Image (cartoon, helix red, strand yellow):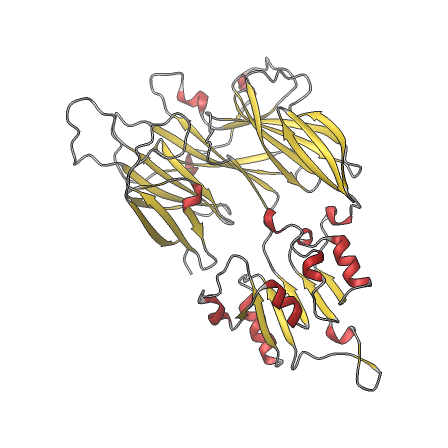
Length: 438
């Protein structure tokens, strides 16, 4: 690409450029950086790097042969910049006016990341009137081609869209966040996700059987229309410190517990299942279809105490790309206390439980039964280790790019579920695990 973007030489002639002797920047220390650096080094290029998630003292820089710098230094120094950052909400618009305006004159940009990392107006200005000579994008997401940006808001059971542009915020549309004809009483809606032009509202309905998924279409003019509603049969998963849903590569990922109550209704009637809502609140529960096969239920080899509350900790994936929502589930049979964490490739469920206290002095020999399960999102075999202690919440976990999982623990606790008594252990300890074979 450098050869196709000419510059003026000392004689006033337009000539192509070579990689030799240039400085190339990489934004994002992904696994592809190391082979890229090897190729650039073979051409005689110097490589600088920036990643907001990797500290300058991290040994990954030296192993990859990249000099760490700030984003401003990267833009000011490099003849070409390759953007490889993963897509996170906080990175949207990262490459805006303040970043692109300080780029080195005649700089070339190559973007292999999500296009929403760039502010399209700032990019257009930097290409036409600013320092950029050219920009190449591997792909353009649909929203990159929309002239105006829309803010989608979920508030008290309603969806709103607001046009964001210029120096004003202009309301555009309002729509109920639940299906037409359904009764919102006994339900709450508090999670909002957007994938392309699809708006997803996640809530919980006690009357309709569990997790409720509403799908809406966001039109190019900012208006909203209802598409469909689906239900996942589940117990109340609410946590004040964690959300139940995630959106990864066009797939919805849900966590929900199913408490096992031998003294209650038939357990089979509460097993994870899914249905498309037919438009009538009185629809019989038989419309649900099971989504959890027996071959996808896992546990450790521990014997469960009869007095210990147990749960099926269920992880469900639903593909947004099809004509209808197709869901598949895996589950862990373990004590009811839990904390879960979702990384780019796996769901981690840390389970814990203590036998019920029967009165009298509590024996010091009675310890919580804890384990950490890893459920890969690609459907491959899960893994687990027995543990002691319990994380505080999802913010106690972090998985790095080398495949290590670090977890901050306290001595005791019941996890992050609703209506659980938190035993506040004072001790803190950190552990580090290799989360996959390399």
